[in-house]
Amino acid sequence: MRLPWIWNFTNYIMKNKFYDYIQQLQDSITSKLEELDGTAKFQQDLWEREEGGGGRTRVIENGTVFEKGGVNISKVYGPLPKSMQNYFGVDDVDFFACGLSLVIHPKSPMVPTVHANWRYFEMYDKEGNIVDQWFGGGQDLTPYYLFDEDATHFHAVCKKACDAHNPEFYPAYKKKCDDYFWNTHRNEARGVGGLFFDYCKATEETSMEDWYSFVTEVGDSFLDAYAPIVQKRKDLPYSQEHRDWQEIRRGRYVEFNLVHDKGTLFGLKTNGRIESILMSLPPHVQWRYDHHPDKGSEEEKLIEVLQSPKDWV
Image (cartoon, rainbow, N blue to C red; front, side, top):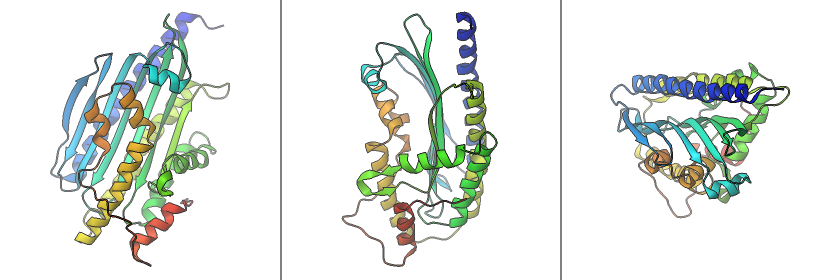
């Protein structure tokens, strides 16, 4: 039997260890993205949440490579709002949540948008005892012009990170990603997927320490998955027509985030910082009535893959 003070101390260590990790990960990701851009720097904004906690938002805008992007960390805690009690099916409990969330919108239509998130969550009773805890996260790629080798590279890095822990993880979390980022009202995927996992809880086979090792391995793989694609595509020529298509597809990205994304809805329902929550939205977007790409075009090629997600590795 584990003594209560040992249980609480173990989890105190876990939540602080993971928050330390995401602070360091934010530093390494923003440094590499600034290097890739060559001109723009991230602007840092520290904020506090009235009910408890706060965060460190970093935003890059109007760069040579990146038109807009955010790499944000937050640590929030306190009473779980009523709307989220109903969502989780719990009574009056307290919570702690921390995570890193990023979205990068490149200027060139030849460079894909990328999203990633790694998070940790705890719930407590009124005596401070943990009643539930889990990890979640993932990373996914949204191209505007499809280079098969880029999607293959991204997925290969994701698979390598998964295989280091369990060979069943990649196919399971790849499918969850395809399912989660499905834009139901458009009957198409948001992008070419990657990984998505949630409610990763301790079992007899897998401890919270094991989940920590897995989630941090995926986090550490992010730059290996994305940076080489940016380097390869950022100087390719493009036209205004390419740019128009990028902005039309960005509209679908916005639709998903505002209609379906659980992370966006969680932030809005827990009185998160609105500027940080909506930093995922691109600066320039188009909605054209009943728009369809030309038959046989590169644009149609992308749509065909989005409507029927495929295996890349």
